[in-house]
Image (cartoon, rainbow, N blue to C red; front, side, top):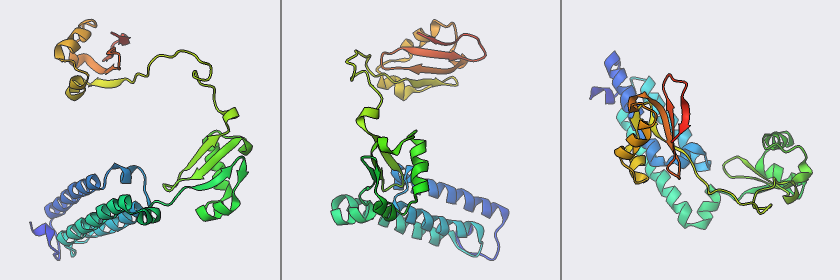
Length: 241
C-alpha cells in the first residue's frame, strides 16, 4: 500500500495501482453524487466537478503527493455535497440559491431584453437555440425560458403546434415500447421476470425461427408480448413472433 503515500518516485506497478484505485474511487463517487449531477450540471454540481477533478488529478500525476489525503478530502466534499442537496430540498431560500427560477426570454413573440442580460446570453445564442428547435419565426413562440441547467425551453403558440390525434378525435393504439430481451445471445433475465415470463416461453418464440439463442443478435419484446428477433448473418431479420 506504499503507493498511497507520497514518495520521491514510484515504480511502474505503483503508478498502475494508483490509476486503478483512483478510477474505481471516482466511479463510487459519481454513483454517490447521483445521475442528475452527471446528466445535467447545476451550479453546485459544476463547483464540485471542478474541485474533485483537481484533487484527484494531482496525486495521479505527481508521486510526491499522497493519494490517501486526496481521497479523504474527496469524501468530505461528497458528504457536504449530499448535505447541501438535501438542504436544498428542505429550505426554500437555499434551493433558490442553488436552483434559481427560470428566466423568461421570450413571451408572446417578444424578446425580453432585460432578462437576456440576467441570463448572460446574447441574442445570437438565443436565435441559435431557436434554430435547434426548428423555430423559423420568433413571433410564433408563446414562451421561451432559460432553465437553471443552462438550456432553453421553447413553447410554440397553440395555433402553430402540430395537430395530434386527440385534436382530431381519432382512436389510437395504446402506447407500447420495445425493450431488448436478448443482446448478442445473452438473455436479460431481469426483464424476462418483469414481464412474468420464463425461458420456456422465450424458447417457444425462438423455435419459430429455427435458431438457437446463440444465433440471436438482438431480440426485443413490447408491452403486447410481441417478440421481434434479429438473427446473426442471415437475411431473415426483424421478423415479429
